[in-house]
Image (cartoon, rainbow, N blue to C red):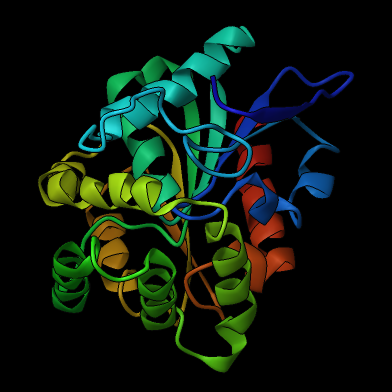
Amino acid sequence: MLNYSIYRHPDNTNWVTFVHGAGGSSSIWFKQVREFRKYYNVLLLDLRGHGKSKPAIKDAFNFKYTFDFITDDILEVIDHEQIGSSHFIGISLGTILIRNLAEKYPDRVDSMIMGGAIMKLNFRSQVLMKLGVVFKSVIPYMFLYKFFAFIIMPKKNHKQSRLLFANEAKKLYQKEFIRWFRLTSEINPLLRFFRDKDIKIPTLYVMGEEDYLFLPSIEKIVSLHEFSNLFVVKNSGHVVNVEQPEVFNEESLSFLHRLTV
């Protein structure tokens, strides 16, 4: 089972579950925990092979992770804690996992807050993925990871996010990085399906105005999906919860309070 932490609220029965992105860990939510635990029960987890969670118990180098496999890891934790349903907050790749969980188990997802959401790979993103596929086995993964982080978060004010994720990614092993990178082989059809289907779950996208790779596709989704809303954070890139934590917390909590009153 995944490594996770829980903060229980003495009165409120609502749960908020935080899901980090690839190469991160639950520690990236350190600017959220104090505020959210004031109002809700909070669950923080480390995805498979990240933070203090162990990789899958599979010795074969070619064992392949899938989005369903990783999503079921999350479900196992909330089942173990007997959490009937939860609000979910994700960042980057974590938003794909939350959306997949909502598709497979909609009764377990009360709402979704999607920070730096990935719902479409534009041309530049797809080129990056293809380069990674070619070089993932011959170039040290930290070089690739730092390169990708710089492309996604290029500006000076994104430096804190880049460093945070680079430091967390150092805890991965090359083999584990490759397992996660192979998820890209199934990402395009999955994201296309998510864009086409308007799921009936309240969703707030919180995107940085400088998140050039991913913001345009989210703007289009919100214009088409009835239950989706978008808040654009000024002077922020991809990792909005780290770069503008006060704004992220305020908008996210306001969204949750409207649903839980």
